[in-house]
Amino acid sequence: TAKEAFASPMRMMLFPTLGLVVFGPTTLALVAPQSRLRMRMSFETSVFEKKEIKLAGTKEEIVKGGRDLFGKLPEAFQGIEQIGVIGWGSQAPAQAQNLKESLEGTSIKVKVGLRPESPSWASAESVGFTEDQGTLGEMFATIKESDLVILLISDAAQATLYKEIFAALKPGCTLGLSHGFLLGHLQSIGEEFPEDINVIAVCPKGMGPSVRRLYEQGKKINGAGINSSFGIHQDKTGQATDI
Image (tube, rainbow, N blue to C red; front, side, top):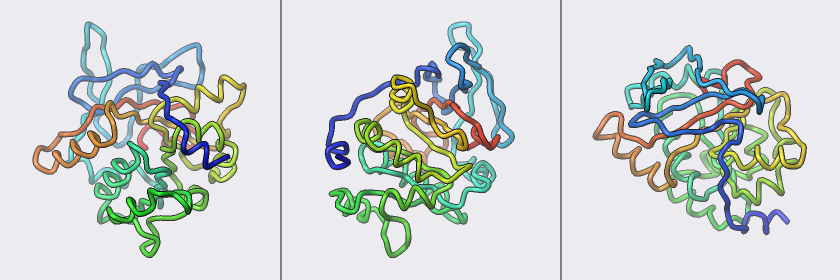
């Protein structure tokens, strides 16, 4: 059942097609195409400044982080009116709060989606996500409304509920993940993501509390944050990399 799925223990699996790696003191990583047989280590961005570094003799392309880049977020999120953060485990509280604060003063809303009976409902309310403000709601309703859906429920819940989740996604939306379990699961059973959406991964190299703590540290030290890798599995709109 859905309730049992949410209660099941979590597992970790990196994107098998991405070869995710960590890049020094900077923030973003690599892009890989859908093919399992090849991987493209370079990427193109029309919003952020791309830099090249060398690690152990290998050239890598990165984008540095920093609060001075927050002004570019509306351009990167062009066409996105609502970001739905689904779940409230380790990563979701950090990512939801970080996004909400980073997008303050813009028209982009960040909304948390949970089961109505979720014990995490009160926790989300305690940090400012509420039904009255339209920033907290039932998970499938939130998925249907959102242009970017960041799926941060447990692996077991993803494996149990993926068909219902896919059915709720808007055509042309972006599905964001923070590790590769769902892709690996789909490949293991011979299934695929819907063809009419973007599928991306942004994978912080730390647990949620570290993601939040280092983001808050950035209020005093510009550029503070946690290393992340990113990957693109599907780019339906041509915007997936900048998102």
